Image (cartoon, rainbow, N blue to C red):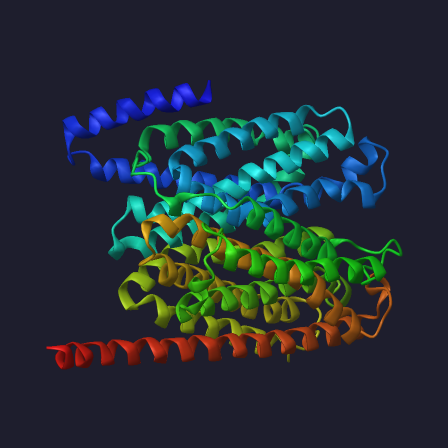
Length: 504
């Protein structure tokens, strides 16, 4: 049924393009970007909206926290393990066709989540929803190269970054309102009308897949796909599963999962070196810009997770804010990132993506450095002393992510856009997963307490300062990578004309 709808729509779109030429291209581009923006909004909303419902779900299904946390983990694991494979599959089978299937799956799975009679059916439906979200996340960035000119790539990336930030920021507050006003089922069913709208916008306005000649290079790599999925699943579980003592400690199970993850990396590299049509071409990593961008994205995302891990404890324990004020202060950062997304894209287009990557990193480092020295002053001065550097960090993050993605995606070959877009999204996800565990461990260690929920206010403040001092060091390391890559790029550009003259 889905294939017949898409096929008929493809014929209609192709005919209308031949008849009208480029007369309505600008409105079509706007509506195409609207469908991509909604895809990004829905997939990021799905990540953050369920967290707030965990206590309600534990009560509704009479389950423990360890059981209901799989509602969040199933979605996160599906995205992390399958996002690169989804991007590669889009390159092979057609990005528009696969994105439509992803939106369809996400929307259908949202219905199943909303009507699930048991917890385990809800978890399975969330995994299916995560698979749809992996396709949506991987292919939205890949589509930018097909919908806008190179000169406007940064602006389009900025728009997608804004929608991602809005989805992340909106999740907890929207989820709270829906649970209070309706029930926990509403946090999943709210996706359905938006999913249907996104599907029909994408069906109508996204460019039809080009049907090129079949070649050996267009094959799929099942062994590489399986090895990467198992490796990423083991790593993600090692970083996210919490020990049953409730303190979030890194136990023997976590260490046991890291071993197959490390082994999986070696097996994956060996399999890809031998594969005729590898999932990820290892030669890609010889490109210094791509390798540097992936490393910086992971480092920056690790640091950004510190704001989510440390912030709630510092605001409640050290500054003495109530739950409502904590939620309000925590929403300032994502709100600032949402406002900065589109201007950040325009700056990347105007001043150069690599330059703006460096500027964004400087802002994150500066904000982290200020927080590492912030005194725990009660009242308005303490709140302002926290909010100001957080705004600097999140605006810097919006600028960095937009510029970094633009630098990579602007000159990517058409048949590699999906897999590289997936790799960029994966590096961000792995950074967030690692940050939740590592920065959380740094915070707990620096606070010198076994249970952070009962720690002394001064201990929590010290923990926050040391955590952001570590964050600043990580960003300085990312900055060194960015500057080195920028210099190498300029040196290559300067040498290119001289090489041309010598050849002549």
